[in-house]
Length: 96
Image (cartoon, rainbow, N blue to C red; front, side, top):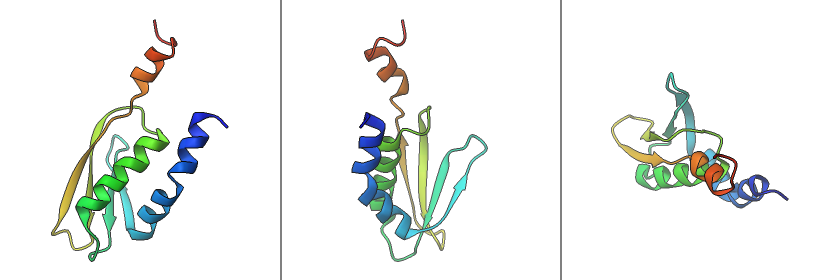
């Protein structure tokens, strides 16, 4: 099993929990997600969860600031996504 598959497997419970709380996912023009969650959920907790899921899946190749908002739009939390793509390639000797 390669690292990507291992990361996806290990994040499966987190991904399931994130998806269970989602109302919808909106995307910016740059393709960065903004997660809208159910009102009764904690936006700060889901921001941490979203960051963990995104960073474990490594589907986005650039760093960005993401956001989680509740359905009513009266609470929000931001998170810093770090792709790690450049550093991984450098560490593995792929980039010289």
